[in-house]
Length: 249
Ligand code: ZN
Ligand code: FE
Image (cartoon, rainbow, N blue to C red; front, side):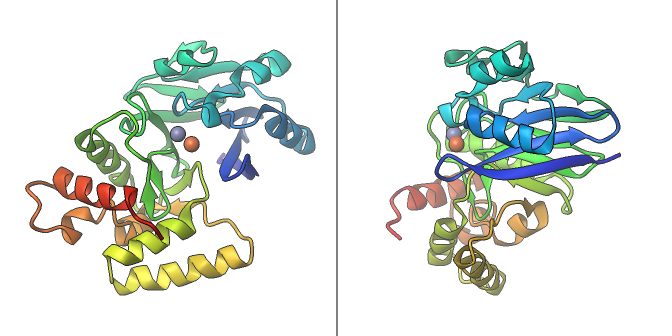
């Protein structure tokens, strides 16, 4: 049976994700941006939290660990770096997997935004939770890692099947689209950007996305095509990332 994914806005531009293994009723939260908001969603759904899965240590991802554990007794799993700010019961690394009931989530090393960032992939269900690694038309800032590390991480995520539904942790898509249009004039990007601006006008989320859509239009994944003279794909990526960091759109 598939995972039931419940997505809701949190803080100023985060998304919260509660996921339920339909076979067993086991429930996890992907990250803990806001303990009160997550608890309110659990109450609304009538779900009981069993597991907290962190992607990285940033406060808008692990800041609610302690309060939620206290309230629910849930087990917390995530990368070791989470202990910088929050409790952690089980350390996860790339190549590990963790069960939520009968659903197996494979752990992908996606360091770069933070050194220890990880993503979660339900291969059977075709669903991935990528935190602040890959965004719709964007990617996370390089706060801790190198461009090379982030390029490797993005390449691992991009190698998931095209049909994979990708849940990113922030609604940054409209500003990402404005930047993307400044470095890429591909018609598929223009068409997607129009859809994104219209969806945001209507107040609709642009998350989740898919691997296919990101491979076709995300300027960070398309960096080697957009910067053909760069010394390497990672260098091309570094150039696009640097351009985004100084973009005033
Ligand atoms: Zn972050
Ligand atoms: Fe974040």
